[in-house]
Length: 199
Image (cartoon, rainbow, N blue to C red):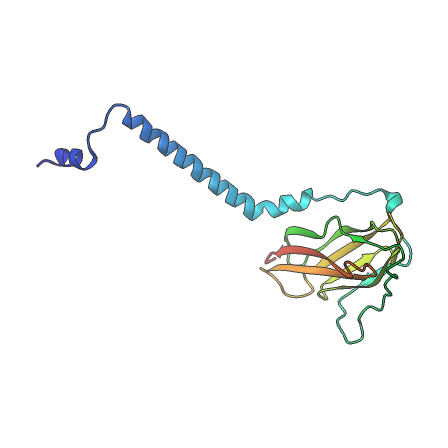
């Protein structure tokens, strides 16, 4: 039997309309492949764009600036907060972090980057920050106020020094931990992340 007849037997005879259908399928498969590759690229490199898009919305009148806090990494014994909770029958504070995570994307091995965050008090009583500390020595934070009245906010500026440790080629995640007199959330955290380059 000739090779031509063998092909007909394996695949059957093709009509005139079968060829275009296979052509359309190839185009659809190729298009789907391109979309999947494009989505993968957006996922891998999208953090840089996402980082640029995250914005804080606040009024300068909303920000309290009194008795600032400089937060560093302190995990020694006796460093626990001694903030007093408000009596249950009194107006209660409520901490709110409109943005509690930020990804810087790719940064240099010796880069020093910073980001501002809001700490809002949406409760009815004054919010008192008893203690604020960072999760690593390479990260510090400045909080504009220790006591935040109802309806007001403090700005927290987190600074990450990528060159403090040798973390080249790693993704690092660092945080600011805030201990307050909010009964429902006595501990809150803000996190930053970065992919540290080799140079």
